[in-house]
Length: 269
Image (tube, rainbow, N blue to C red):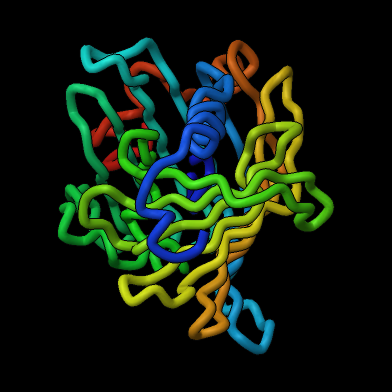
């Protein structure tokens, strides 16, 4: 989920929004350039919640993240691994995403199948491990991927925000995204995602942002499918960064040089 990209991290009106404006682009550049930890280790709880509010499934997982020096194209090399430990029937399910690295892509290993497989780009619109997010939602969008239109300043869920509409330049899963950017942290705290027909499809709400050793990290969010009423909630119960993250990896017998590999997906070590 960036998005859980963290984990988890997803998303005026009319024809004018097709064209970028300087303020909208400047805001989204600041969002993209927010300081990120070199290493992150987090334990999180995920609930799949039905329309009537009942929890269909409760999951627990560890997430390991790496944000390293820039690649040849000037973009940071980011890596994320999710290792599910509960429920027992789901333990051993693992997910790896590498962006801008030598082995770029998404890979998944299911508890029922020990062999990791690459997630093809044709699967971007498919559900990510049964959640309300898709595999495509997990991809980091570069500022240059969209045209940006500043709409207004507005308070949303207690956050003082700048609202920006993002319209993809190339074909994309969504026709547009409208983001409410918290001005204190430059983090999107509310995102509306519209389908190709322009109808509101999903809403991503960040409820809590915690400052961890100088980094602003979302620790509680909700991803809701507007049409079905189903939602996925995520709560980070523990998180450490940089040297503390490396120390925790060592304590867990996790090697930072091998955790972001398909072999870890297969073996868990």
